[in-house]
Image (cartoon, rainbow, N blue to C red):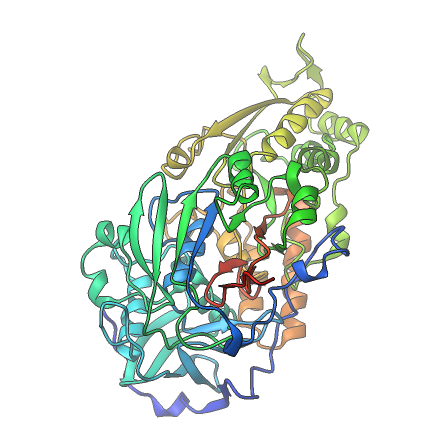
Length: 568
């Protein structure tokens, strides 16, 4: 269903015009943090090198080794975002320093009441199937994201925008208007995420099954063929003319295409770079971290949003009791588990609410619930878990203190399983019987080991630029609709009220203060316990230049500016 908007002049006066020249939004978000440890000897590896367009060698195919293969080439999982970034364009982009900058929208205005956004769309842009990319095409996409049509509904945009969105319409061929029911400050951040890449409305009519295999965007590359279990091949879009303001050049990509290989075995994947079978790989194994930095240019980004965390099921015993939740957090040396498993290549994150690269992050919360078995035992005694069975497991009212942890390598790197095994062993000293429930990605996304009686803990993350992720994680169940993105089932209306106030607050300082108030409450109530962060790492051959990570979003690899330089 396409919703239309009538112009309402009474509240359509803009407060400011935003363009790609000099008047970016004054309300900026602090730059995404880049963390690189022990790489001072390789400063050129931290950022993609600046290319000089006139001297760039064109041609060649980038052979890229990736970790995970999704079930569809677009969607809400970050592994799908990486693919979509190659073939679709977004309405706006977010720069590394947190500014919203032009992409398909050349400029935009925001009404005084912050409910109407009017975008001027770049002219002469087409999808790669020949369909015009105009205001109507973008409106069709946005309305589809928020519809109930399973072929069109967007699993990222819908949770963010369903409460605030009213309509999107083309009020002129190249003028898009988005109207909100209430102000929602993160709107442009949401539009900048790769999962909100604009797809051809003509192609979308083919249905989800066809579009999953062969989506059509307007981006620098065209999906050529998906050989399941092996690779996706992309070819250059020769007519590309809609690069974002964050790009290093304009016009078509330099390379002829990308062969996106799925290499789930980390030893094979890293080995392929050493042997020359690939030109770039994703997710450097912890055991190879030092070696990679001595051999290759390395790119790294710590994603914002939530960290990789343990979500504790709070709707029934034992974790309906905050004392037991805190006891579980104190019962294990999670920092040592992370250091041991990832060999120092990933930092520990004790703040379960927010990743350390999020602008609203409170560093003091990163040390929450340090290892203290004595405190864990005291809390469990206080909570009434005073008896132990012959195996040393605590018992209350005849029920043993069993904690089943459900997880999947969709969210956990191979090195991370060792961290869970350390947690399993250490928690036993305090009387927890921890049982690990590994689940393959297909079954995990289908709900295996995720029913209300199937787990006590789920390990997962959700990436975003910052604290806007709180809406996804902590929206309470409403009108009989369960928030399936809240596996802890923690329902707190006071917390939700603070989050909503933050979303509607346009003053950056006040908004950050509200988000940090929510952040403190989440950590204090311990429905989630921090473990580590999700990082995006790439190692490339020295002759592959100007690959970069989209640090303004969630670190998606960008090959648009990349080129080969065999003379260096």
